[in-house]
Length: 236
Image (cartoon, rainbow, N blue to C red; front, top):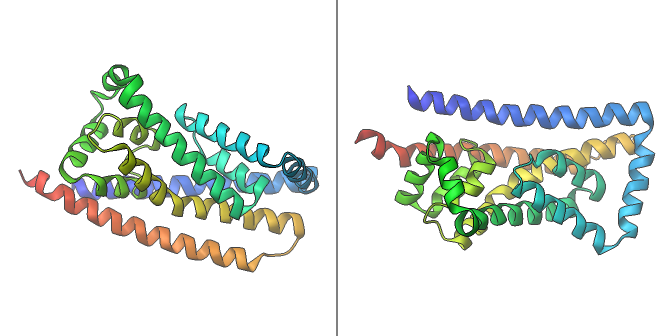
């Protein structure tokens, strides 16, 4: 019964993220139609391009600060796709989200350990995370980045209190956040391209569908692995 509840919550969070993603992108489309944002978006892109590498550096820096401050990253990711396009946006968001998560990890482990430990001490989700990482190590970092059983910000700060090595956390966080990043940015880029050009970018749509199918499969596999890891503990 408990496993069914966990699975239902996980699916609910997945659906909630997709709904939020769709709502934000659809809002951009409506605004584009009403206020001619297609032309303004192109002007913004040209302005950012005129800044050269500085524009990308500023965007990544803002993303790092937002993640460390526990600000939801989805709107910022969508903005990255709108400004830079999918290929460059995926790279920048991947860098920003990984460095932001790593910053939160280091803050938790070395700068504010006592305060964060007190904050999470009574959190049942953190206790579960702590138990799983102590028993199974790096694979739990990978699984929890794919299965949204734990809030993103809780993971970043929570892992700093566990025994997981920093580079293990950073590598698996980057790798397992990447598929979701591709889905959101490629999907956004496809919709924005359709709005600004009036044509459906079938190649981008194909990449989006393939990435989404991969993420769904990876989440299901990770969810099954997580259940396997928790079964021995539940039987004790």
